[in-house]
Image (cartoon, rainbow, N blue to C red):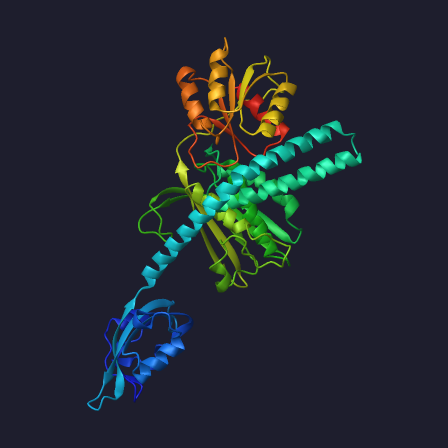
Length: 480
């Protein structure tokens, strides 16, 4: 209850103390100052500007109103408040004050924000997924024919240089669509059990070339580190992104520390995540730090504090998407002038890494490969690569034609190489049919994006791919 004439509170519930940290009987109007940058009018005042609503309210034209706004008192965090008020009048009908109720809706606002972010993520995911399938098919064709042109051209000739530039542009385009899919958590991952210490060791060698001399890199690999179940290549990408981000935050030099650790987490915990056994990856720098305004947006796609042309703004958003899609958690702490610390928690895996023997240069025999792809140019490129290796190729445009070819063979193909998304019968449906008749048939999916989970035990080759990558993958599978 507030007296307008004396500008004092006549009565205030004790619950207000929980919001702003001042005893109810000592609160002054000056202690209750809304942060005007995010005020929202509700109720009868919905749609009005705050200033207009206040004028109408005090003039009596708006007998009751509602407002949602933020407040902050000294030493307290910002809270969201929902405020409903009605006017009080004296016996002459003159306005003397107001009577109202306030509600702390901070948690509700957070929940609404999380829902909004989830909806935005879903929309971006659908958009990225729709673009990725066709875009990666086109890039596969571009990269494939560029590689063929380079092979046919004389080394050092203009034609060879042109083809190489086409290939470079194709790779950059592939990286961009991959980052968008990672942010939207729609990447096709190839998870396996492995140790992050191996990733750290491999990445340390790469960082030696990426970090300037004025940055000191320190790595601390935890002894007997637990395994995790994730995509090793994507985890290395996350580590590189965070390290490069740290490098850019230390233009005058500093220290970059990367460490791994086994971590058992109980309930409750500082991370507010389910209890369990985790592997903790920490990336800490002594750079410039991230200001509070930027901290709210660092995982947004295309958000960057770097000058135009010096960053895409996808590094941290990509890392966040990869970690989330892998079932992990990503946290950060930062203080301007002191540096930033990123912490990633992956669930412990009790599976052991699969040790593979060195691959032979090529297989001793030349088995038949069944190739299924609805895109004519990709099918042509893949068939040429397989034939150049001396393998016999059965070529099908869709799942039904593949089944006909499969049943027409006296001996079953030793490898099925198929696209995932095809008209009529998808690659996944085709695989289900063939595995019923030939349970041990090795399966290699070619895909740039899919909404569906791929059958367990099947390998994937991500589009766009090069001839070398296709050849290497086929040799790898036939060598097992």
